[in-house]
Length: 459
Image 1 (cartoon, helix red, strand yellow):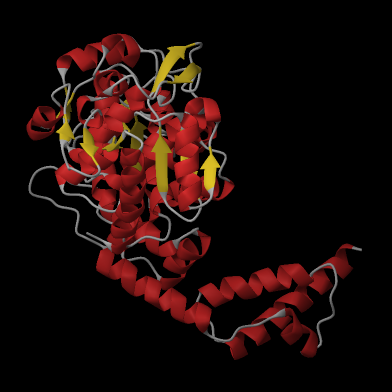
Image 2: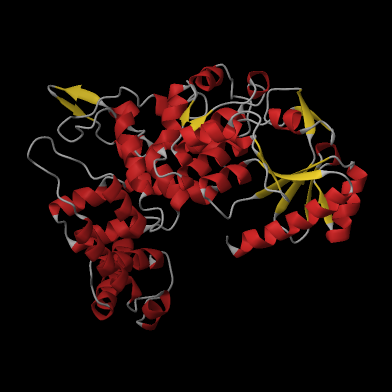
């Protein structure tokens, strides 16, 4: 067990011993028990305290540190300096359509059966006595863990929290589990439109960053008819044809899911994993509006630019993170270039311009590896990653070398004025062409003088 968990267990045991002296019991609950049985460590620690009153629990926590109260009516506490959630059994009555639209009341003496009945899935209803290690399994959670099945606990309460649709999908993706058919049917009846984007994005992020096959998150949502309204653009990819010469795998949905899963292999290599996977998911949305059949061929010319408004709309619906949006939009606009330039063995100037325009040049290569096109039959699109990484190294070497600044131009006799910024832009362009600093200075001064003369002639 990792050091973090040893420390967390230590405080849980101290709480449990103090609770036991008051006649109560303390249980590990929820995902902590599930993950422990699956062999995972290092997750969030949640305990639930039964059989003592809230004032008694307050005193116990005060004897161990500084309690932090997360709403007394919710019966949820923590201890300052400890990464642990401490809850009391509670009843929830739905009052609205959102994830938090519940009236909550604490009942420390309701018993383990009623306390676990409010949980979402059977394996999340498991409880483990902190002191004895006894597992309380009222709803067959261990059986479903062994069978790799996600099954709801209570049909009536399950549908009251629409976030559970997305939680089911991300758990299926992260653990490679399947939904029980009766749970599938329940999910199909749930309206998720009233959820906050923060809650939906949190489940999406867990699926993208924690799954070997993040596509399974979307396959589950597709199966339970829950792509709308949060992922509506993705539903338009289903059945959208592609040229079988380059995409023998099938429609744009299938292609996007395959690219997403391949991109997941590079999460540890890229600068911004979450944004990188969103790029993989959304890169071909432009095909929705650009796909056309011409003769016996299917084309989607310009889809990388046409897709940007659709990508932006998708991201606006789910996140407020400006950096993430800039990354995805920038990289989506460029996503066709790496493989095209590698295939044609383009000049250094062309690859330098591409890398210079990219929010994350190295990530762009990894994306190209995930999005590598295929040819049908015996003809195959060769892997251009070696070429691209060599060119990236050349670009980075050029960008590390000393270069012209405004002070260099001034020292050479050019005065700041109306054409000064144009001269600097020109200097940057010839830098990308591989011109050394000494020659670049001569060319830039000549260019600036010509700009001045042209301006004078116009006057």
